[in-house]
Length: 446
Ligand SMILES: [Zn+2]
Image (tube, rainbow, N blue to C red):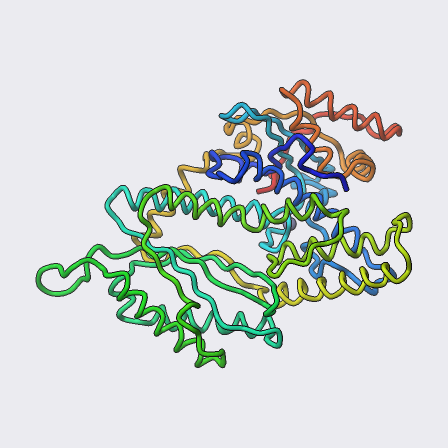
């Protein structure tokens, strides 16, 4: 695979996630776009390792992941469905591309959907938190981890996390000080095995409520002690090791910049690492001390792809080593998928007041439209063109999905983008069904 950083970077978001101005401020302005492109590349490469060599091995363990981004055979109206390509120039003058008409799995462990959902969640979170702060509310960042070793399964770690949080949520002292929590789970794998952990934002009550005059504002140190005690109790009761004080960290959010940095990190963590990983896929796979679960998948994909590539200039010993390494990483990925099945990775606060706040923010970020097509147009997208399922699969087989979307994004305007797509179709050299803009149906993906 070519280095994606050498390519013109693009936005591969689908319409929903592309709607709001990005709050991403990574090291470079296009970090996020690189990550998104890397996501499509990784998904397709991992899927290529999942068709089953005689059905013995599949890198992607669920059907959703294996079929994500496939074209629908038939649309909602019974007509053959198609794939539509869209172009847009964002408010910073950068060309973007999006596509619609593909099935999406929606999994947080999907290289494409996980990134899109994290970014979306970070936009909503940031907007909601800013409103909260503007109206005088206070916030605190919470990081909650458990002690773990190589011998602990992903399922056990996940059980301790849930038990710790449940206990914390039952505490009256915590309830007295916090309106509610927004919470996201992250999963790394390192020297000490599975490292699942929570990042949360606590919406602090301005005062401890009670009879009589309002008492002093919440003391964060005191709150931290309460929360840590409850967390430890819950984790231990579920069979986990007694958490050390370093397992639990709380700090008050001092200003809007700190908040923006936090949201950015949350959105880009998995995705940014993924881009770096995809870019060096041809090199010797780095074995970092701690890798995000997306990096583990990228490592597995790189190693297995190379081990199976007949042209790779490697001897049989190296080939076997790569294969074993790839399978070991694939097992880790499978374990995390199984342990976190049917689970929400991101949980919005339940308190009525906060639900209203998040709901209002979400509405502002979405442009409400009656159909998906109108929604895309209302968000400033121009339809570049579309392909029927047959033509799409031919062009995709030749170029790959990421290349197609990159070609659209590299164009200055929709007209150029249309020509770029036609050039890719010409390169296939077959007389497929005619290329035509297909009006999108309600199957536009989000
Ligand atoms: Zn997906």
